[in-house]
Length: 39
Image 1 (cartoon, rainbow, N blue to C red):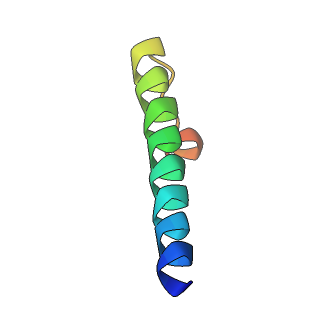
Image 2 (cartoon, rainbow, N blue to C red):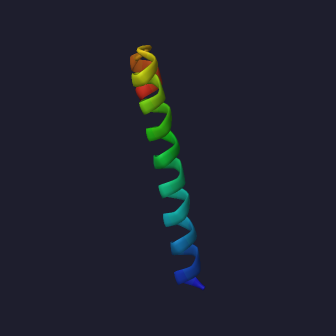
Image 3 (cartoon, rainbow, N blue to C red):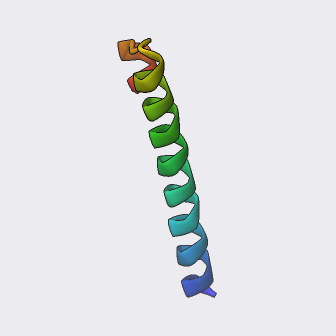
């Protein structure tokens, strides 16, 4: 059971990271980069 929870946590971390990266790339392409959005 511990392995399953660890995998779920890893998947969540990857999803969150990819979401943040997508937002950052979109901001860069739009030319509206602000310190608050890149945090």
